[in-house]
Image (cartoon, rainbow, N blue to C red):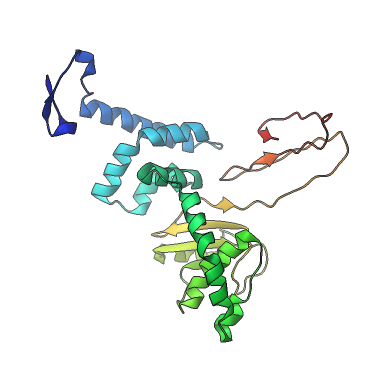
Length: 261
């Protein structure tokens, strides 16, 4: 018999010595090696998503303990856990903590209350009503409108929360260090102070002056050609692009890699 720490050090039956739980020090050392492997993978030009996910799944216990107990600055967290600042791993980490889907729960609640918010926005007059009247009936833009419209509706100054720029190399990036929480919006065209940014080129979350990896928002591209086509797609970014080829004839032959049909 041995004392099991998972059961208030109660005595538990032990049939074989190999059933003993691993020493805590040994486990932590192995997890630390997994963390270092994750960092090395993230340094690659094209990190492997399956490998990153595996390493992040394994190291979740020490990461949770480190963040909850030590509460390190965001800059330190990014140095030790760079994968945590990618969109896929933010979603995965939420699921590890809550066993829920971040995207499904968030969008379900947002879509449920969107009609009521739109009615409220349309009822507003004056300068608030002018800003809130920029309504586009495409569902993704409606979601953006509701999120952006909340600050307008409540009369909150979102200048220091929603930051817009033409590129990451602009001089205003020097001000990021003063931002506790914010969203950086990159635009294709000229910037306007009252723009609701319903169709941004890319987005990035800023925490304690540290921007997460830029998320490129891809535009859909449809190609309508003859029976013989050669396509080359260069899609670099996070999340990785999904490429879909639709068969319009049973005689069509699809050849390629990383393509779903």
